[in-house]
Image (cartoon, rainbow, N blue to C red; front, side, top):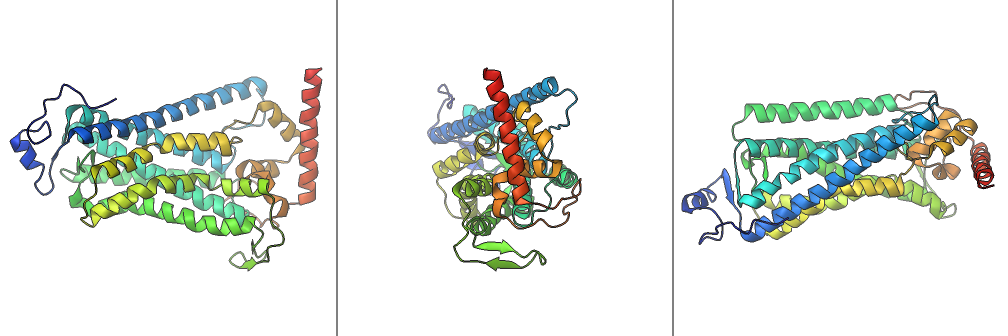
Length: 400
């Protein structure tokens, strides 16, 4: 996809006539005249969005396949698509990834025409962009905080009700913020300058409606990753009686590599989000400071940002394949027979390898659906061994 080659370029290097070109350089313009290079850059941002959209749609097809497979193998089985909070967060994240990708695909028209201007199409792109970007930021932030609390304090392992509530509140906030802003302000969605979004006259709405959440998700990811890293290294632990009290230790009980990988993998989504948001945040912050930012740098940052949906899909398949029924139903049957629900769900939410050296769980937390049970590492290890033995025996019998 590229900018159309049959566009009639004028002497000013754009397709705009003199009146349009002068209007694009006025304060708070309602039109942007794109150069040939900017048109190509916008085509690339649209292609990145199309990659993300395709990846997420394929993911939903795979989830649908998983549901059909479970219904066939376990027609009366005790399974749910959304078994643990992570399932709920990931499904919501993928939904907002689709909306965000659709907002980026709107750029096809601007790249083809060489002009970005106000109108119903511009308003539609601005609304879709707001919903998608704000939704991804809020769900990523909620996921970051929940997984961090679950790792260190072992609360909210099965808090499906809490997860549904947080996603519902996020959706309500997005609907109210976007709906009220768009419905009450004139020229709220305007060229900014290469696509349509909240105009520069509404800087407060820009910050409160998106930027602040992007930056909170960005910094909280880095801040929470540091103590989690020291926890996996055996240098940090939480007091069993006082949840707010931490203890530091010498480097003597370091968790093994596989366990560190499982623990740190929990924050892979917010960390990946931080990496792709950081260049865009820098570019937009410079624009806030009235600094000149090359269009190539801005379009490159946006292209990276628009790939977030595809990156989220890859992370799920590589790091969290036990979510959203990607665990084969045969393995689920064996674990269902050998493990109690709280431990099985805890392993799905966090990765069972993490807890071989973790502290005892606290009672309840974040509105757990079921009562938390005391946790016994030796019992867990023996149950896992029995489960693996059952699976291996079944595989050998099938081979014979």
